[in-house]
Amino acid sequence: MNRDPLVMKYFPAILSKEESRNLFDEINRRTMTNGFGLWACELKESKEVIGFVGLNKSTAQFYFSPCIEIGWRLRSQYWRKGYAKEAAIAVLQFAFEVLKLEKVVAFTATSNTPSESLMRALGMTKLPDNFLHPALPKEHPLAEHVVYQITAPL
Image (cartoon, rainbow, N blue to C red; front, side):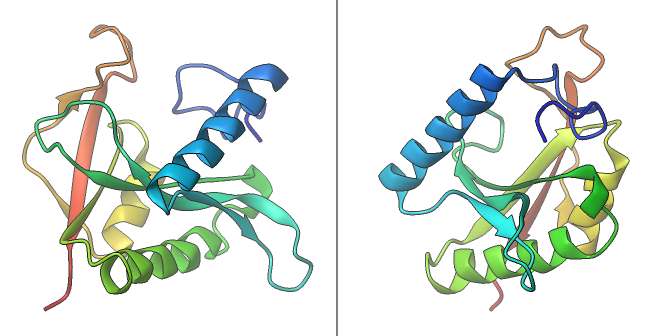
């Protein structure tokens, strides 16, 4: 998945096998530390893993920090089938009902309109200010990001 140019279109680079393994290890470490994380997303019928959806406690500093973000990454052949939305709804339910979070954010490069559409479909609201992602040079085409948030239901 991390080597698929379609999947990685809105990320700075395609990941090597070693980089993917390191990401996997980091996701597992954060999950163990935080009690939540980016979980494997699988098809109900076959249990085939099609990507990940979950929560990440961001370590970067943004104007909306501290924050817990919801994120997703699915293999491209499973896009536009409702899987990311279904999983994200379950993740948000967990965030608000189990973790008792007050808000969850999501952010992406301004050019990533498919993810932005999902954010809106989840009922998230766009914050007024975009930001430059601190991990990218300011002139990088993916540096400018939008941010959305959703608050816990009353």
